[in-house]
Amino acid sequence: MTDGQVHILHGVGASAGIAIGQAVVIDMRKIERYPKLKIPEDRVEDELRRFDEALALSQKQVAEAISALEAHNVIREHVLILEAHLLMLKDPALVDRVRTLIATEFINAEWALKRAIEEIEKAMDAVDDAYLRSRVADAAFVAERLMRNLTGRKTGSFHHAHNSIIVAHDLSPADTAMLNKGMVLGFATDVGGMTSHTAIIAHSLEIPAVVGLENASSVVNPGDTIILDGISGVLIVNPSESQILEYQNRARSYLSMEIKLKEKAKEPAVTRDGKRIVVKGNLEFKEEVKTVLDHGAEGIGLYRTEFLYLVRKDIPTEEDHFEAYRSVVQAVHPYNTVIRTLDLGGDKFYSALNTIFSERNPVMGLRAIRLCLKETGIFKTQLKGILRASHYGDTSIMFPMISGIDELHQAKEILEETKRELKIQGIPFDEDIRVGIMVEVPSAAVIADLLAKEVDFFSLGTNDLIQYSLAIDRGNEFVNYLYEPLHPAVLRLIKFTVDAAHNAGIEVSMCGEMAGREIYTPILLGMGIDSLSTNAYAISHVKEMARKINIEKCRKIVEHLFEMRKASEIYEFMTREIMENTHDLFDLA
Image (cartoon, one colour):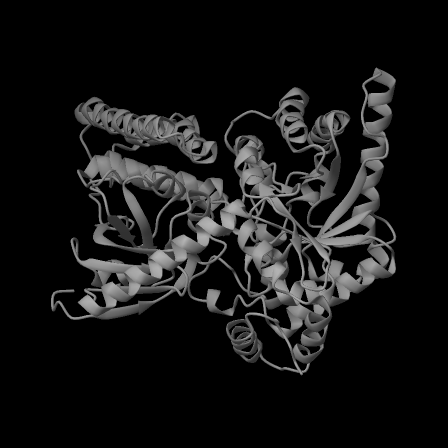
């Protein structure tokens, strides 16, 4: 962009907030052009040395990024992402293969690196990108860093001057993890969606982000003044003085609101007609538990356990599981902690089990409970860790990706076997531990009335439920506009699930992205959802929305919404109602 005129780009508001600053454009596009050279045999050692130097530099860069993050006391999650990348830079599957190709086929390091990563990608054919970046995607990011160092291209650094806003085509988990909250005000990317990894990291850093802008990295120049509106998903390039003034006022108002919400975060959420609404937190790492509780969580509605596997090359032991879960359970008690059994496969790849994941369509393949039922030893090891932790506080077990009764029965049988083994060993645990399932597969929602008779609770996982119901890849920027929580089919599946749960006398929660958006709160509570579980950042917002709600009127709203045929109609109606009814929300009289 060279004309200096005001330009407005529209994307997806992935993390709320407003930032005004100078654009730092990072070229993180994949290097498509690289030298492909045959080398003489007598130059092999020189080429191996060149690769080793690039490898050492890449390791040094990642290690320095880890040190920088630790110095700023960031959430441990970000450090773990980079530690995983450091492990990959030492992984023989990549490093030794590159060296072998150089030495045996007499090709240059860039070509060998490209060949090696293509072999890994081929073995993993069509791994999806969703809540967590897959291991194969991480390998690609690591390879890209190596390629940049081999070719002399900059790898990008986020330690810039104050008031910088990062603009990039995409940001890898490592790139996003290296965002320094003290130096960077926010970021904008061409690709990504509400459930992308970068969106989730932005939430945890509590900085604004707009993703899915399509061409921001191409049209924004370094040094341009930009306004980043993570609330409405807008990026304004070269704004006028009046626009800057307007957004400065908006930013102050938003900050003031955030401060007030945080002050009330630990107060109960009681609706206008007196119903207490429980809002819990989603947790990925035990180190996050204090942050989640400080933001007002009344328990943990979803403790994801995948990173216990993804940041290491060996299989976690029973003791590893026990220690990871016990610390959280003790910290959260007397509130309940819901621990989801591992949801590996599909969009989350684990190197120690890499032979399992060579599938044509992993997202619909051997993942989550299906993997657990195949690898029962790994499953039982985790179950023992959860059961042992249950002795130290209120704990529940939740099985992901249940699609039918047979799967559920098998999982429960393995759980009972595990309980018997612990009893024989004389190890204490909560023998009445509650068992629930994630309802995230359309088939589970359709037979929710049958499944409800078999478990103690449901938790709606809307991220996958929406994806599977609407047949879209939620991480694909070309179709993520179809990822629509307010689609009438999605709302009907949710309502049917809630009714089935209540008819069977069990509770139903929601732990997907939908639970953390205030515009959906009146609909979900009007449908009868018993509790909501979301990221730490959104807890105070959801609580505040709940305080404005009249449940009986929300039920009438839900009836009205079910008469609408399109998601756009529902969204427009909800936006209007929320904007116009500030005192007595959803007064239809």
